[in-house]
Amino acid sequence: MNHPPRNAPWYSLAIAVLIGDQAAKTYIDMTTPLGWSHEVTSFFNLVHVLNPGAAFSFLAGAGGWQRWFFLAIALAASAWLIWLLSRPLQKLEGLSYSLILGGALGNGFDRAVRGQVIDYLDFHLRGWHWPAFNIADMAIMGGAIALVLQSLVGVENPGGAKEAQ
Image 1 (cartoon, rainbow, N blue to C red):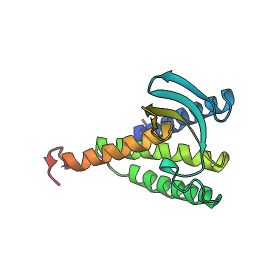
Image 2 (cartoon, helix red, strand yellow; image 1 turned 135 degrees about the horizontal axis):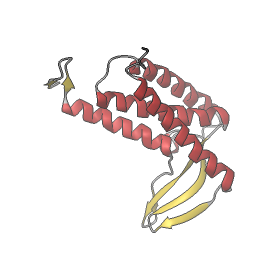
Image 3 (cartoon, rainbow, N blue to C red; image 1 turned 45 degrees about the vertical axis):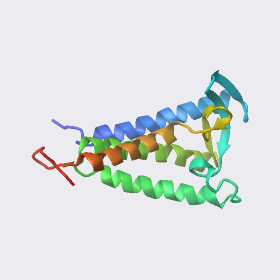
C-alpha cells in the first residue's frame, strides 16, 4: 500500500494558503475598482490597492525593476522552503515553513502575473493606517512568528524529548 509522503500535510497547507490568497485577491480584483474602500468597522476597511513594493511598500516607487527583484526572491525562498519541507521536521517548524511558502508563492504569483501585489485588508485607528495587506502577508507573518516560537521552546530530539537550545 502506498502512503503519502510524511510531509504531504505541509505541502498541502502551503497550497491551501496559495489558493485562498489567490481566490481572495481575484475576488477583490474582479468585483471592486482599484482604489475602492468599504468601511466594515470603525477600525477596519476592505480596500483594493496595488503594492509594487515589498512589505510596508518598501521600494514601491523604485521604477519597476523591483517587480523582478522581489519575484526572484520569492522563487528562491520558495525553492529553499520546499527543500526544507522535504526533511524530517518538528510540527511547529513544518507549520512555519509551509505558511511562509504559501505566502511567498501567493505574492510571487501576483508579481509574475499582475506585476504588483493586490492588498485588501486595511486596519486603522484614529487616522493612523497600518499598511494594507492580504492573506499571503498574514501567512508569512504567522510563519515567522511560529519560527520565533520554535526557537524559544526548544527542539525535540528523535525520541520526542525536548532539549533546550
